Length: 289
Image (tube, rainbow, N blue to C red; front, side, top):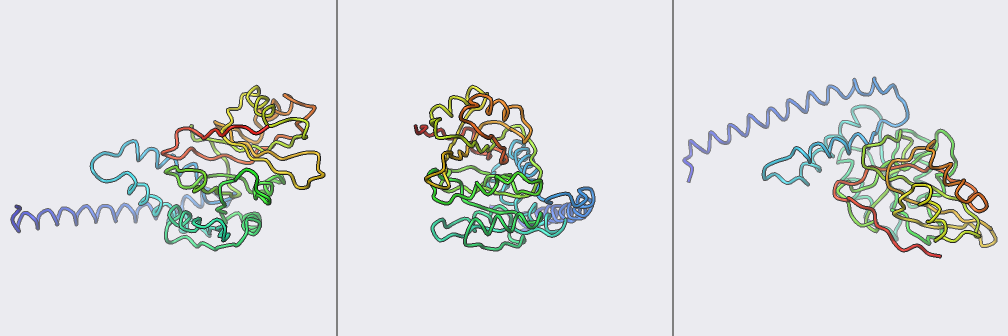
């Protein structure tokens, strides 16, 4: 058993390390204003792709007994606090009674300092994000067959329209317990990404054929959800998750439209997200015909 003198020495070493950590946090915070100036007020202050790249690098270099999950949690707190120093930033959370849990998910991701506001519906979240580039929206992961899904709100195509930029939590998890973050933020590839596309197609094309056409256009489909606004509408919207980064001007969008010009009316990019740290492959549910 260590002597009192030995314990005192260990505690002094811990105090020195704590001081070093604190000094580095002060130094990091001093850089936040410079980062904000360099961004020049363009779109959102938040860069989720940059955050994931930081976390991936730290997880790769981590060693020792300290839990990796704790490292991720600490850095979420640091990065959230730094966002508030860079400028005005807040989070709008969909807190619908039938889909609980997203407030805690958002708080775990953005930390205790960031201002968060609950909204009862996805439409209110989308309006908050559309009206203010400094607001990020947290919404439930899309589900197939929803009567009033939120993702068609992204179909406007305007320059200031929100887009999907992240999946929460970054540690991975089942879609039923995951969330999607939307923002007026730039979409940037991270090297391991998933993209969301919206395909407007006539009912003449089945989901099986649509999946086949997407594969022919070079898209590896991991998830699909379908929505039709009205029963008398002769076309459906299909939300499709595909592997890899596809941007708004990607040639694959034209390839998708050209793969079935008789049935596919539009293929639009809705955003992308970095693959979570513990989520190497997307789920592939069977396609409906």
